[in-house]
Length: 347
Image (tube, rainbow, N blue to C red; front, side, top):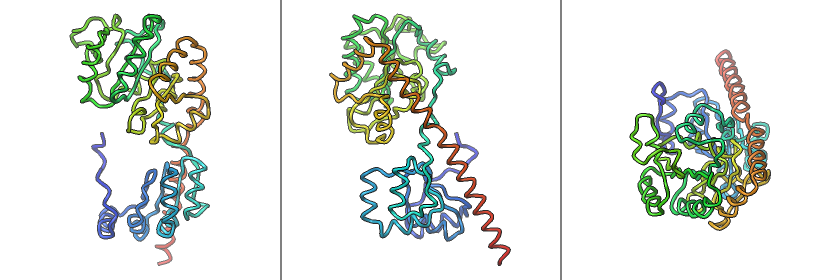
C-alpha cells in the first residue's frame, strides 16, 4: 500500500535511540498523532532544528490526571512543541494546563469524522447490495465488528422478531477472521437460512442457494464493513459488550443508520459522548435493551429514521478537521523554513 514510502517503527524513547534516528532522518517537521508524547524524541528533533506538531490530539480523563501529576516532566516537552491540533476545545485546554504554549494550541476537530462516508449510493455499497440481493422493501439489521457472544445476542433478537417482520434481513460481520467458521457453526445450530459473503462473488459456487432467499448474511471477508454499513437501516456496533472498548461507530452514524452499542466504549469515549448528546445513537446495557432498541426501530421507522438523521448531521457538522489541520501544518512548515533561511543568512 505504501511501497513508494519509507515506513519504519518509531524508536523507543531512549536518548541514544532517538538521536540516531534523527541523524538518519534529518526531519524538517516531526508530526506526532493523538497522544504520542515522547520527551526525548521531541527534544532530539528540536535540537536538529525540526518543527514538532501533535495532530488529532486527545487526552482522556485518565491520561490527563496522570500527566497532571507529572507536569514537572511533561511541561517542558509540551513547551517544545510548535503546534498542537486538538480534537476539541476541552482537550486543547488540557494541553494548555499541562504547560503547552497557549498560542500554539488549536481545536481543529477529530480527523476520524473526515474518513466517514455519508452517501449510501456510493459504488461499493451499491455493488454489495446487488450481490446480496437486498431490495428496497427489506429492512437490514447489521451487527458489525462483533465478538463473542455478541453474535448470539443479535441472532436471538433476529429470531424473535423475524416472524413478525418477514422483510427483516440480518448481516453479521465478526471482528476477527479466525471466528468466521465459529459464527457459521452457530448459524447452523440455530437452523436459520444463511449465506456466506464469499459465496456471493460472481464466479463463486452458490453452495447454499440464492442470496435473495437467505435471511442472514455472514460477511466472511476483510475490509468491507464500512461499505456494508451503507446497506443497513438498524445497526449494532460490536466490541461494546465485552472488554475491547468498542469499534468505530462513526461509520453507521455517517450513513444515518439507527445505531446502538453496548456500554463499553472507552476507546471512542468522545465520539460516543457527542452522538449521545446529539440524540443520534443509543447505549444498550444488555441483550434485553438491544432487543428493545431493534423492536422499536422496526415498529417506529420514523423514530429510527430521525435518530439516524441526527447522527448523520452531527458527522457532517464535524467534518473539515483534516483540512484545518493540514492548513496549520503547512503554515508551520513555511514558518520554520523561513526561520531556517534567516538563521543561515545570519550565520
